[in-house]
Each structure stands twice: as structure tokens, then as C-alpha cells.
Image 1: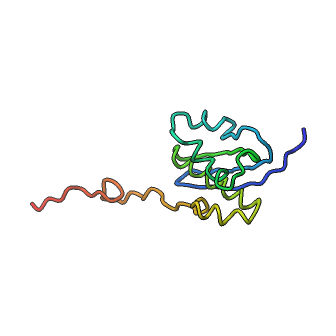
Image 2: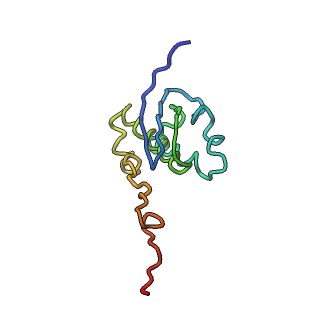
Image 3: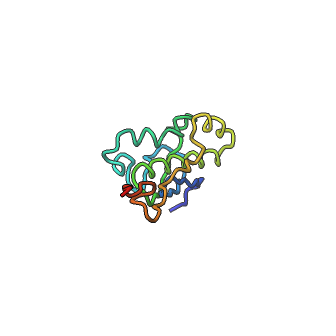
Length: 132
């Protein structure tokens, strides 16, 4: 079996990490060895959101990808796949970066869960104050 040439991009969001590999060709894109719609079953618009970088640069029939994702929930995983795909695309061709940046697909979203503090019920919620 001949090894296929690929370009790799890493995407992260919340606690999810994803490694995306782009290949030339017209095959079904997969996430953890499963088709996108099967892996993110029950999540509306998951496939549309993940494929947004390929649609933005109009390469949707010419390239496909495989993604290995771990950690986090569905939202974090979808966003990490999207970022990894965008990074792999501009790694392949630097001229695609302005179009991807215009569509807001290049910037990593730094928001994550705030840690819980001691003497608090949650990250910011405090116990009820009693004057007497």
C-alpha cells in the first residue's frame, strides 16, 4: 500500500485537541474513522460548520480530510476540527490565509472554563451572605 501525501494542522478549543490531515482527492472526510454526520450524530449543522474552511476557499470537491479528535464535548470538538482544517489549508497554500482570516477561521478561541475558587460554590458564586 502506497502512503498518501498529506498536510497536517492542529486545532484546539476548550479542552478538545484535533489533528487534521488533508489529502488530495474526492473521498468522504472522516472524524476518528467515522463519517462526520455519523460521529456528530444529532448535532445540527455540524457538517456545515466543519466544512466551512473548504467551502470558503472553494476546495470542497478537490480535497478531503481525516481528523483524530480527543477531549471535551461536541462543541469543542467541532470547533477544534474546523480550526485544524483551516490551519492545514493555509499550511498547504499561504495565499489562502487572508480569505480564511476574513471568514474568522484562523484565530483560536481562547475561552475555557474558569477554575473553581475555594470558599465559593462555583467559579464566581459565593455562599449567601448573612448579616446576623
